[in-house]
Amino acid sequence: MTVMQMPSSSSTRLDLITQSRNVLLGGKRGQVAVHDWIAASWRRCIEAGHEPQRRVAFDVISSAMQRRTREANRQLAQAAQSTLLQLGQAIAPIRYFAILTNAQGVVVASSGQIDSQDRRATLITREGVDLSERAVGTTAIGAALAEQADVWLHRGEHFFEDTSAYSCAGSPIFDGAGRCAGMLDVTGIEVQERPELIHRVSSAARRIENQLVLANPHTLVAHLRWAGADALGREAEGLLCLGEDGQICAMNRTARQMLGVSELASASHASDVFATDWRRLFDAQLGQAALEVPLWSGLQVELRTSRSGKLAPKTTSSVVDTRVRHSVGALKAHEVDVIRDTVAQLKGNVAAAAEKLGISRATVYRKLRSGSR
Image (cartoon, rainbow, N blue to C red):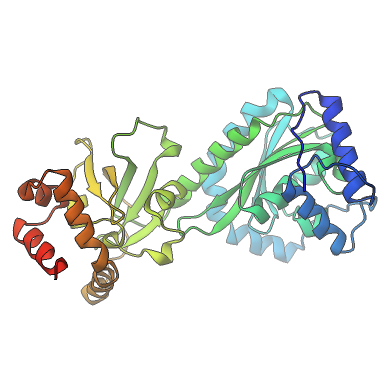
């Protein structure tokens, strides 16, 4: 499918969206000027038996389901409260407002200057209204949840004609285990297109994710950035929450990307990701210079730590020993390479390599000998 370059002219942009609708929804010939994921969503709506002209009810889930949804998403709502309020205030001057949904697309909260006289605004900002793709067709909410990525939709890129007045940006929100917990949306009604809001809503979503991560019981927070990299804003740093015995309690999206971990289940202990004695992390004190810590990939991260009052329950030594033994067994093939590379980087200085890796010189020699057999 050919995707054309989006023009800056608003009228031309709307004309191209209309042309795309005629091609994909009306069966006419011509070029398509919408993203593939929008076209895919339109096709899913058609396959579900929807027609663009059908009226959209914007149904609210039952009272019993609302109570269950409210309880199930209490932590999400609490984590988002401050950020949602700030976002709503920031985008009010350009006539946009913010919506928070759960992972099923049901509205949990909203914020901003929502015109109580405009039914199109009040319908979609009610707690409990279902804004999933199956209920209201193609929207930023449904698309962000389906694509697990940041999205932008303008006017006729929504499937139903009833939703063609909206322009919206959406960003998924992930919890400390790497699961999608919900999504954050900013919407305007018959407003100027503002695709730059993708960055605004994505930054806010990451702040909410960080709050979700820190809400998990933990003993230590490791703040990560690449060694030698320039300092970044708080929402751009990796967060890794550890329990007293080195177990990983939660991590944010940036930490998962830096450490090459898709979800928490694939890395349950600090020794699964750091190629050094994990106890070093607990020796570092808040305010001290950042530690340079090697990863099993051979890369280095800079790490600062802070303590927490939300203490994680201490696991039994047998559980921790099992985790560590499993980690060592799984990573045995990698650790010799990491040690060898570190020695090479330090021009054969075994003492310096041992200090950098947090192990003894005898261990360096032993590992290198065993790896050469």
